[in-house]
Image 1 (cartoon, helix red, strand yellow):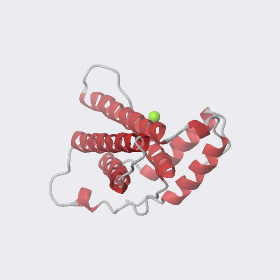
Image 2 (cartoon, helix red, strand yellow; image 1 turned 90 degrees about the vertical axis):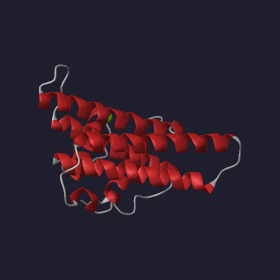
Image 3 (tube, protein in one colour; image 1 turned 60 degrees about the vertical axis):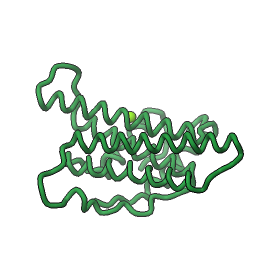
Image 4 (cartoon, protein in one colour; image 1 turned 60 degrees about the horizontal axis):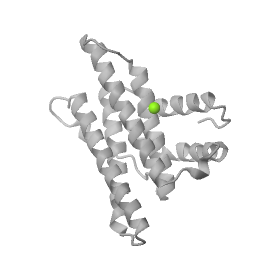
Length: 186
Ligand SMILES: [Mg+2]
């Protein structure tokens, strides 16, 4: 799977220009946004698993999972805008197509959760460095690395669940624009 990130970048920039209060959204806010959306994705996966296995409790559908995948990628790109980097290549997901039994969805989800945890940790380091007016270049590299890994695990999950990630991103982007009365569409 490969995703063209340039359309999302243009749409995010355009929508943020019309989003009230956008000038108050800084790196810390963007990292919280990624952690929040990834957490919503974890919740949707748990509730989908309940539906599929007949476990009692609230359930959600595959479309709900796809929506949260879209939100997570959109939030990652907003963080990348704040950090001034691009997801240059969405690596072909060879890893997910290697021989052997498919990796269970829960395992992929936990890898995604771990990547987000690392991302949050290095953003916290960066914020702390900024307060101390000493910034290590390696911290920014680590943020980029774990943002990329987070995106990779979202791709793996989409593959494993048969979700078309590009459609999921577009659908959720436009739902959000409609919900908040923004003109920008993807
Ligand atoms: Mg969400």
